[in-house]
Amino acid sequence: MSPAGGVLCLVLKVCTGRWGLRVYRKRQYRVMNRFLSHATNRIDAKGRVSVPSMFRSVLSALDIRELYCFQDFVFPAISAGGPELLDRFERQIGGEDPFSPQTNQMSLLIHGGGVFMKLDQEGRLMVTDFIRDFTGITTEVTFVGRADHFQLWAPQVFLERQAAAREERRLRGQRSD
Image 1 (cartoon, rainbow, N blue to C red):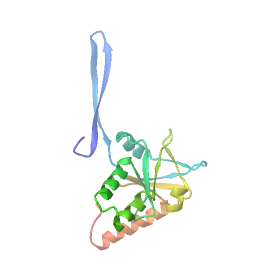
Image 2 (image 1 turned 120 degrees about the vertical axis):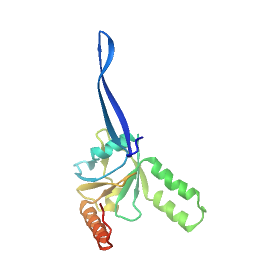
Image 3 (image 1 turned 90 degrees about the horizontal axis):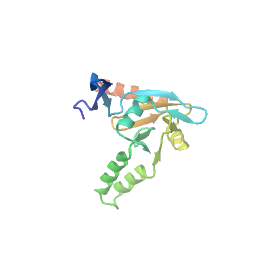
Image 4 (image 1 turned 45 degrees about the vertical axis):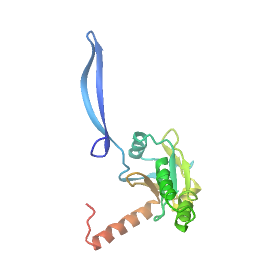
């Protein structure tokens, strides 16, 4: 793991010849392990949407094969990450009184508002009623990086909420750069 938040990989190009194996080119590259940026993709006729390649690269680097998806607690968005995202919530619940109202509310949100989903071989996600009903997504999906997970938004709603957040920070004198 590199200090800049990515996995540092070393690629060696090797040739064989009369004298055995020789390294003739070394190249380093960084595989990011965080979901950053945003992208909008169209839903196809079968109700599938391609997850952006930058997000698929992170899923691959983190060896995430199954997505835990839940209805976000604040925004009209579906949050998606690996099973460790659910594990984190369950550890939080496990440290609380199992009969408290807060623990029951959290369980309603993460268990009652969550599903496991898988990408198909081409990196597409089925846009189910679970996603459409909660987000208002119709023909396009905006994928939004949130560091350790990403979200699925209706494009116009994302743009409005992002502009509102930027304006709120501007009014408080806090810059986003």
